[in-house]
Structures are given as structure tokens and as C-alpha cells.
Image (cartoon, rainbow, N blue to C red):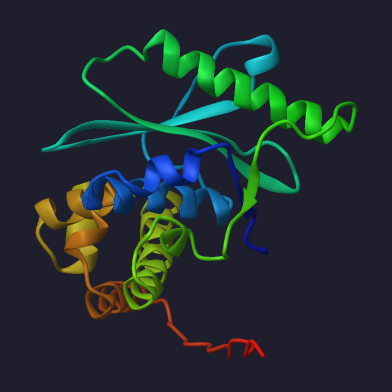
Length: 215
């Protein structure tokens, strides 16, 4: 299955790229999972019914506070990232809710080609972590780690393993499995994730692709 393209709506990319590093890693992992056709961690429907149906919110809580990301993944051609913000409360503010709604409405109008484009739509680079402002080398590492971690989490879910059973299969502590399931990408190296996949009986191969040189 091909990765679904990301389209950043309005200032969503800029707003997300200035969030704290750990929050960006977590939300970037969520978007990467959705690109691969899997559900993000702890997502919930947002914005409401009617014209807002289909919008999703991912949530991350870090030492710096709570961070949320609104996006729409139901359209075949792309995932539209609507809004990213910091919040101090459990309830989304009316201002943030209205901003996400208005951007969603603009996307719908654009797709129906009934109106001229009235809001900025920016296509992703192909690496969500690069889009979020990580340096090229780190973005490349994060993308690999996100894909390996996503595969491990999918295997645990597909096999119906409890954390205790996964702990035994992987030969790690239950706390380590908990970090894996919660998507704590910053706590896992590529080597560690490859070793864990191997213990699950998965062969990991590497494929490289040359960048096209810009004249």
C-alpha cells in the first residue's frame, strides 16, 4: 500500500513545527501511522457531525503540557492536516474548534471545485518529520523508527497479545512494551526495533533510493 500524501492546510505545518520536540515526535508518529493505513494512538472524532464529520484529533501529553492535532484522513487522495495547538484544559477552545472547522470547510469546497482556492494548501515533502522541522538526518532516522515501531505495534494488535504476552515474546520488560504501545519513539533506536521485530519472526530488509539532483 502506497503512503498517503500529506497536505498542510493554512498555518497547520508552521504551528506544529514550533511545538516542543517530544510533542512533534509523537504527533509525527501519529501522522505516519495514518499515512500507512493504520490508526493513530488514542485518536478521537472531533469538530462534530454534519460538515465536520470525518475529522480526527490526536492528543499528546508531555511535561510541557497537552498538544492536539486535527486532521482529515477520509479522502482518498490525501490526509489534510487542519490545525495543531497547545491547550491547558481537557476541552478544546471555541477558537481552536472554529479554526479547524473553517479549514475543513475550505478543503471541502476546494475538492468540489465550486470555489476559488481561499486558503493555503501545502503538499508534504514525503517525510512528515522533515515537514515538522527536524534536520534531514534526524528526520530520516525518525521515519525509519516510526515505520519499524508501527509494524511492531500492528503485530501486537493483530496477534491479540496482552502486554504481558508481548513482554515474554520480545524478551523485554513490561514497561518497555508499554512505551512501545504508547508510541514513545524517542526511547527506541533503529537497532532495538529491528531486534524486536526479529524476535517476532519478521525479516527486516533495507531499500535505498537516490534523490534526484537539482540542477
